[in-house]
Length: 288
Image (tube, rainbow, N blue to C red; front, side, top):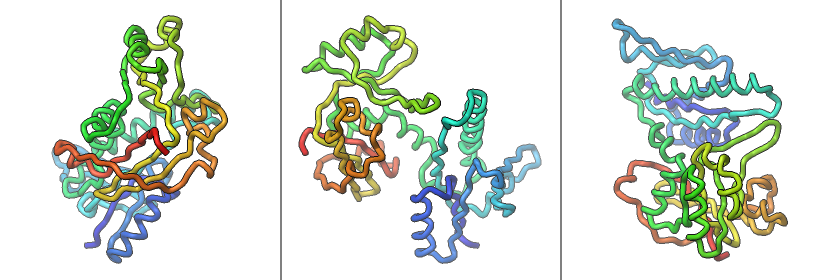
């Protein structure tokens, strides 16, 4: 039986395209099945009941081709749907957000119905790694320097952070992305010392990240796969506007920002995280 790899994602994803080529080069009989939850001709069927056979209770349908659970040997979750669109009305946005949540709930259940499949990136681990509070804790445990930070919805605690940082400058970051139609994104923003007292309701509504502002000459995007380290330098500080230098994503379409870089750093992977797989860090440095 061919080695069937279920890839949950989009055909337009260049990562999926490249991995598919390498898989076929290594194993000509391997079969990569691309399943896009938002494709109108891709379906999932999960059956339950006292007479259900656990090995036939999950079927993936891709363009009319039915793939049973017993045929799937590996699963790669690479789905990164665009949550919101500027062209949709409020009702459409709510419906799309609901559909995405329903899909993710069904996909989380697949591990129970694919008992023989190896997950290249277990969902529970991936979701934990996307949690910024966990990322900060992990960064400290592996020896990275973390700016003075508090995650809170308490205005008093935010005010105290201004007193604790040496230069008295603090930034705000959200825990998750926010897009407000038609074209507003929530970026990293510097707040004033008066903000906790003048706008306490903005803080108490939900927890957020409040962090010491770190001046730097550039940013690094570091991807670690096994023991291989891939580094891209982002020349964020060449931008004219202060707000853009603070969060370069406002200008991420400018090609001159990016270059390949090499870094040397001494760190270690705590035994408790040895099974987490590939990890991505965004590291801000003080020296070019």
